[in-house]
Each structure stands twice: as C-alpha cells, then as structure tokens.
Image 1 (spheres, rainbow, N blue to C red):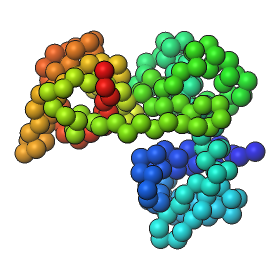
Image 2 (cartoon, rainbow, N blue to C red):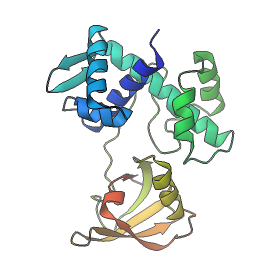
Image 3 (spheres, helix red, strand yellow):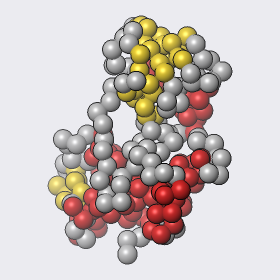
Image 4 (spheres, rainbow, N blue to C red):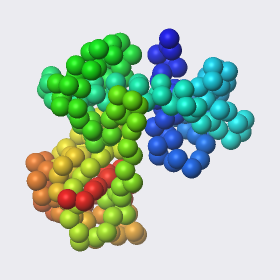
Length: 225
C-alpha cells in the first residue's frame, strides 16, 4: 500500500501533467507543488521510478506510468469528492476545504468515497470546477480559455478556478466570479495588465463592472453558456 507521501507526489505529478500534457514534469515543478526542497523531490522521484510508478529522465523530468497514473487518479478522485462533500453537505467555506481534503484523502475508505459519490449525485466537478476522475480513474480535462485570453464582448460562465489558495478564492468570491457565474470581458489593457469585466449572477459584493489583474484573470477559466 502506498504511503501518504507517495500519494501526494503522484497526485502532484498528475495535476502538472494535466496542465501540460506534451512535456515531462520537471523536479522543480514537483518540488514547488509539494512544497519541498528540489533535492528532496529528486530523491522521491528516483524512489517512484524504482517502484515502477514514473519514468524518470535525469535533467529532463518524469512522466507517470500507467500504474502511477491509476493510483494518482484514485487519490485525486478522493481529494475532490471530499472537497465537494465538505462544501455541499457540511457547509464548509470553499476557500478552506483544500487543506482539509489534503489530510482526509489518505484516511477515507473506498466504501466511504463511494457513498459520498452517490450522495452527491455522481458529480463531475469539485467546488472549484476541477474535474473529478470517475471510479475507473478516467478524468476529462477540457481545454478552456481564461479571462485573460477568451474572446471579448462574448458571454461566458466561470467554469474553473485554478489557484486554490484561500486568499485567492476569497478574492474570487468577493468579486462574484465563483464557478457558474456569468461573465463578459469588455476590454483588456496589456500595458496596465488589467481586464475589464461585467459579472452577472455571481452574488459577490462587487457584482457588476469590475477590473481584474491579468495574472489573476489567467487563473479563472471560462466555458460556453
């Protein structure tokens, strides 16, 4: 049985692979995702490679093997279902459930996860819009534009928030940009690095017209209505 540390690394690698499926995941990106020193990440990557969970190319990076991908998807499914359960059933704030799910994902049984999934109606996304792998470990990663590059003056709905730090999620909520909100980009100012938006239905205190930094806008993905 994999340790919680192994599961954390595999999950981090899977998420990084989903961000850029064409490239190997560097140990630097893994170290950042797992909040460890680069040397610590390199040592763990070698251990994962010896266990047949990743293929490792020194000085280039890693890629999950099929066995590693299955285990990583299993952990990711638990994490995202726990997040949704904490929000929808226990009423926790969506900005604080990521840290809770990090701990609980290693403790909950498969039977409990199956019950959660059934109670929640077999959801496809978590509270932040991240796709939930199915029971077979399959996960659909739609290619969605962000507020930083979507067509202007066209209506969209907020589909996913990529930055899940509590501070950023609270900002998103204040601005009425939670998943499901309707939004339209009116203008982008590259020199000022700002995006002007019209928000409809987000429910935040700044609902209506607002301005968002380009970097923040790039973390909010949108889909068709």
